[in-house]
Image (cartoon, rainbow, N blue to C red; front, top):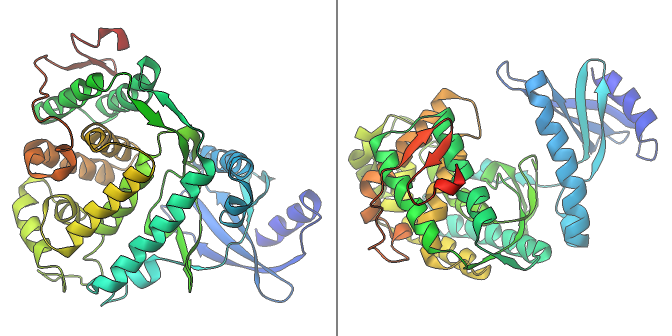
Length: 382
């Protein structure tokens, strides 16, 4: 396959250096894509190639190719340096293949999963600072002003994600109560200005490349979009960082440096057995230096793009609903559903949902029919 890809590149992108061998980075049986690093004639990484192993994986390659082409135009020189260049998209035999330039740096997860890293407050703060610097600059470079939160924005950013969640995953009394409140709060936001920037869409540690100077670039852009509400990137990084914080200490009942983690785990274990649930509860409902860091990071990043605190009560639950529908994996979906149910039951205990008026409570009965969120005061959305 590597030889066939090399021949395809020589005919499709003849201006790029000739490649030598290649290294397969991931080819798990369950992985929808294979990732290959092609080496130049000096043995140095030259190109990154993604190969769709199934037809279902092909749309993500098409989406990443399109997103990279667009965001590199909008973002200018800095974004072009900090994101892969799309080289070619085409078929090699029966497989759809995407070739990109190779970005230098090591995934942040390399240090993250090293025992001792996440217990060290200074190291964790440096990870958060590096992610903040990169994300803030990316959002500044791609900002396009704002728009009023009106019908179209309400449908795109609130109603449609909740409707998809209801159709694909389900709707319990807890979810009905939480998302009914979300819709009511969103209605109260009508006319508020919403800042628009580009969004990476999967801003987690594994996609952040690091070097001596901090974050050197970000990969995997298939979920990226332009001129949109970028708050998902702000939530994604701390949520993912918290979710795996115990992985360097398998089988332990406590995490070094994080006494609040086991407390949060014990309080939330009845919501589900998802491996990431304890970290989620710790980040947003726990106590200690790490939950404080998560809060400060989100508040500062939101303030930087002029997202007022009261909007977290709308967009954070919607973010979780969108995460749940990102992958068609029952474990992943049920895991995020357990986090949403916990949030519904415990939402009075987190600062995220206290930014606005606590008196906004829905008095309507929210129902789902054929994938649409139906409520007496939002019938126009159905």
